[in-house]
Length: 137
Ligand code: AMP
Ligand code: ZN
Image (cartoon, rainbow, N blue to C red):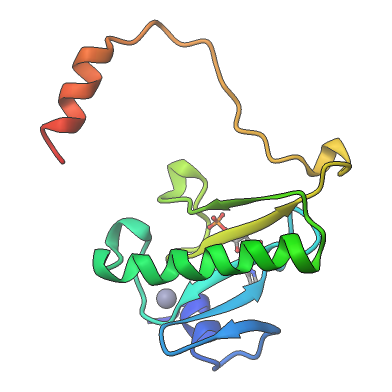
């Protein structure tokens, strides 16, 4: 399989590595949202978080927490976004599960801001939405 994040995670393509263990590698995003924007790449291929073994997610997010705290301490970030896009419809552009850890700075220019836009949509039937999700949990 020709997956660039498999190759980076497993060291076949060299990268600046912030942290590595048996399960994952943490690198810088090539096209950062802010200075220090990091990606956590599991070494095991999964198309997205939705396919990754649930029992291994805890470790990924432990490391996300560690990296986020280090960004507050070491980069003087004022906060962090920790997120995973799943599927192209949700903005996923690389088909290998990764978690973004994005340091945020109180004084950062507006152009760097990560904005989740909200839209006016017809008032949803919350009971029907809840039922449709609950039935599939
Ligand atoms: P997503 O849109 O959530 O799939 O995020 C993919 C991220 O991977 C984007 O922010 C890209 O800038 C980043 N990216 C793509 N190719 C590379 C690469 N070779 N090295 C580091 N980051 C990359
Ligand atoms: Zn992969």
